[in-house]
Image (cartoon, rainbow over all chains, first blue to last red):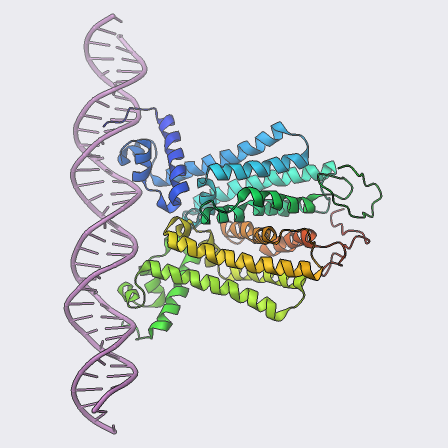
Length: 220
Length: 220
DNA sequence: TGTACATCAGTGAACGCGCGTTCACTGATGTAC
DNA sequence: TGTACATCAGTGAACGCGCGTTCACTGATGTAC
């Protein structure tokens, strides 16, 4: 049956999403143009009406991922003003993004990406670095605000932030969803907050530590 | 030229190591039996004298990785008795293992592994879980000893421990070694120690942050 | 110590398969007149 | 409003390539007598 003729911008979007879905199921290596085409409902050679080839399809998948990550940052900035809450919400959103879009961690972790073309590897690197930069910025804002310890290196904290998510994502993928993401998230965030929390600001939960700096507010 | 006839146990070892080296360079997907054979110095079909096929080769690579991780745990147990020092040394050893054996993170992160055969995926899962179990045990010992906070969930802490390493490993791979692993390790561990540290026990080495002395402030 | 034989690792040609890609052709859609 | 034409997305056959795997054969090594 002949597929309905569809504008190329629409098809490109469909193809990118189909590829991401296939990655969720079979990994980047499991993506074939035949599979993508089947998912979209066209014949393999039809892909070439919209992309130069497989490489370009994978490129737009990276774009898609970068966009999704960026949207999350934008969303928490728009929804919330308190830096501590912002970071926490971003954490929860990131987990949710991964949970509903398993193709994303698969792609980020994929060695196809960084073992393959240097250009694509660099692109992925740029996306991750950009995201880390946004996270680090949130940390800095929290420090300026006085809610986070001032002696933290924000860039390292951003990587540690990712570290709360990534191994959990892997365990979740490897265990076929049996690893309890929500439970991990709750406890891991509790631990991360210990790192972040300034002694002066009584942010979130108790951290009853006899600070040397007198002005401890006992706000809880 | 005909390769010298070599006992199968030796060849198996050589083949596994060659595969791991190839993974370091080109990822799991970049491993071909032709490549492995070339590395070892035999002809592709010779691999079949020692393994059933490619799947079995990848299986022994997983065994190799599991063994290396286990050796690290054993080593720190043998070398050190203090739980805090033990965990720190394991952290450093893990980083070193990754740095000299890039094939290991590539394999662990590889979606080839967990997108491929369920059996292999389960095997990888078992290796990781076992390692996490060992780390959690070290944490528990630290808690029993009084050096670590008692209110931490050791299993989550073990995952967070991995999280100190994994994203850093990815950044290191993606940046072609430009990401400063050592610098990250130093600062990340400093942050992790904040989580671990009990208030009663005086901390590990530096950071004499026992609650009475002032905390170390680097930036300002 | 020498001989015969079983065992076992290495070889190269050949295979089948899946996949990315090309290409000439089809037919629908939008537009100029 | 109808007609002619350019544009553009979809099709199916065919290709070349790399790869895992098979197989009959070679020749070295170890062992029984």
